Length: 308
Image (cartoon, rainbow, N blue to C red; front, side, top):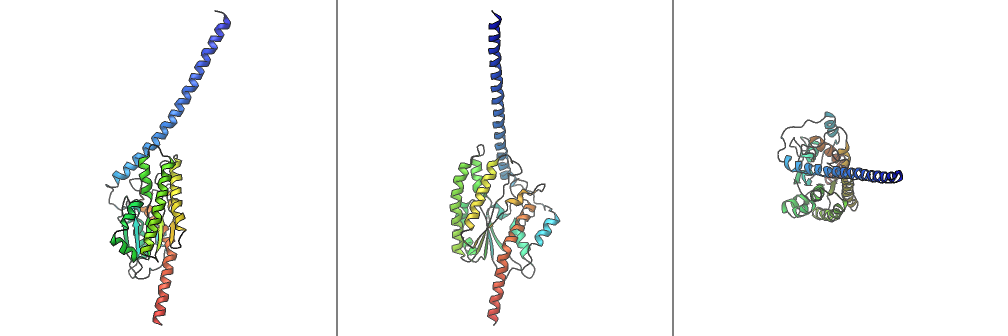
């Protein structure tokens, strides 16, 4: 065989080996990326399982939170609620207070503690129910006892929507695409408007505060951008609906749970802990203060007119 032919054969073999090497590296990298992506989805599934398992066995012990946060809440509002001012809280586990180891009712307990004193005690009727989705809350609003409470309410605090999202997450945990969440969001928007309409029909003069939800996965799965986008879109849906009526209000909480180096989640890594609920309570108090002050002044003016 001539030297020229040997070089041609050698060159062909070398080119083939190089091509095979490049393809191997490319497929390996692509496979590694896909594997990492699948692992992230598996991690989410594990967190979901933690929510279901650890919620039931959560310790009943008091969770100490920083005095600075406690003092901030205590100083958030310095007014007395007028007598016979009725507040109703309704919704999902955030209203129920799941994750609050002090067993004080979560953010509702924070509000109740800070609006009450010995001379002016108040009680907030709490209809929070763990796992409630918007369709289930609509059904619960047909309950005569709940309707009676809402009819007498001056203010309604509402948390709903997180479980609607979780239902889609559980069904698509290994393939988180925005399309199924977008379809569910549109249905949620319709049901949320129906919830607002139902409450306003029962209590036409009440102020309704929709409390937005946060991203419990943010500290664990920052690389999954879909979750951040989904949460933002769903929160924006609630915010936009509240703009349609002066009695509807929106309270954001997502930013509270973006604090670094602060433990704000319970043992299930999903619900707020006592500190997390404290921050939510502080935020809610800040938003509802003007409404309570206005109601108090109106009541005082009515009393003055009656006395005259």
